[in-house]
Length: 217
Image 1 (cartoon, rainbow, N blue to C red):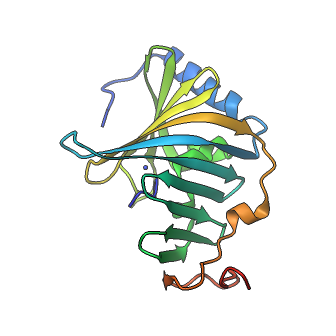
Image 2 (image 1 turned 90 degrees about the vertical axis):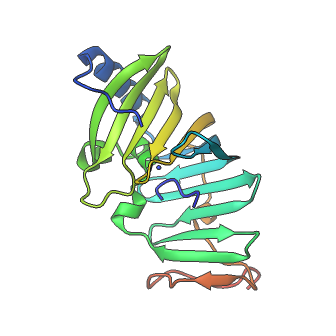
């Protein structure tokens, strides 16, 4: 599944403090005063053997504290919406919607640290990695007893996050490149509200209080 968590490089030893300061400073500068965020992404999925499985493109939006929208446009349309109560995954080709309760762990996509810096040290062990060119890197490892992934690296340029690399529990790697960041855009509430289209199969039950009705009602 494409869901970035629902998101295999390990540094030996301790990186110099200057790496940590530079990467952390860039992240904190980008996140300061940030309540909402939107941008574009390119995603590449890579097998443990290094084979490219798929490349896709799309849009993303986040709103503090627990809402996000992750929309794949090419090559196959898919929409993932976290509304604060549920995570909705809509596969247009399959005409199917999957819904599950948005537990605190599911809400903790590594990208959400951009709008909730308190999450960084609360939910992750953070360590710096050596820079590559002008990009400073941080590695995040989830503190949870049953993490959703092995590790994630965030590459930060002078203008903010440029790359993210996630290694899952069976060593598949997903790489994202980000562009066209918009800080604190005005995001309509409907952007984070999912209503299953009429006629699609819905797998799972939304938590109490979530609204589910066909489009057009």
